[in-house]
Length: 237
Image (cartoon, rainbow, N blue to C red; front, side, top):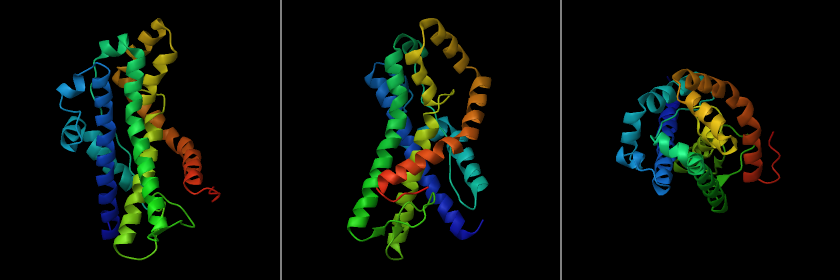
């Protein structure tokens, strides 16, 4: 792998770990606030990435690296982690469990907004500019070479990556967060049957395969809308 792509992959991975850790810590914090201390007892209500990596080495190390290599030359990254919760608490408190599930994507939305604020602040200061063409690593561009260029790439990845994680995790298939939200709309019997299905490893593997194959079709129009909100009147396609 060329040095430039290696450096880009390292930057993607650092921001992936930060974003995923923030996502999982938000799950654990929300569960604790709503009465389930399981994540705290496992040491996962933390912004320290090491416990999250130790719990989910495949989703936080192997898959992100493989997905980046597979996506070259464009280069983007996906992966996952998990935060434990008490299934009996979730069964008895479906609304709280759904809000706990939404806390992770909400954390990614916060990071998308942080990136957007940084982009506009950079434009106001004359450091960044709106790009003529947007890519995963070029949501904004630098007005000058050097540190400004590195900062533009970093904040572009922060925006794109967290939008990707937000959309991916809201897909309503197990084991993703969007599947937990479905419990708000199911009867007691249907909810119990669906929960029994969700915990099956086969259903989780199938769910991830479905999400992986649909993410491009779902993400592209959302990405366009996000860019038009970031740059009103730009008319990105």
